[in-house]
Length: 124
Image (cartoon, rainbow, N blue to C red; front, side):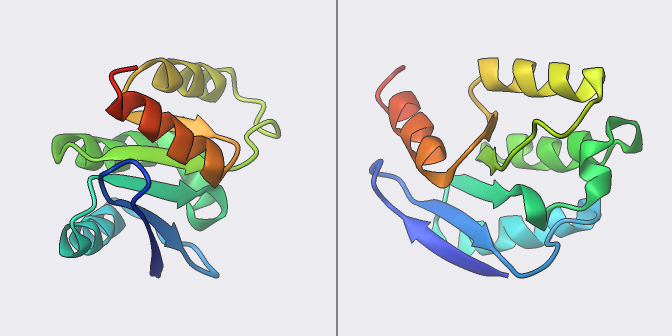
């Protein structure tokens, strides 16, 4: 796991990158959080391909448990990727509701994530 640091919003945003899955279990979120705290990041960008397929199967509770860890530590999360291939109505509703809030977002690109964080930092 590597971090790309973005500081365009005045706060540090860490983009997690890897050639493989970074989060496959709830404990993996703790590892990511430790890395975020080490660099002072309060925002994180995760890539869809770095999350285990079970993350997108809500019945496994992996997404809820992992995302709750970030929320508990007031870390905003943007998950970037193409979510159109998922047919689950529950997942679509989860994505929709998450995107309406201010903690967790499912977006199509890193640029969209950085823009969303900037808007929120400016009170939007």
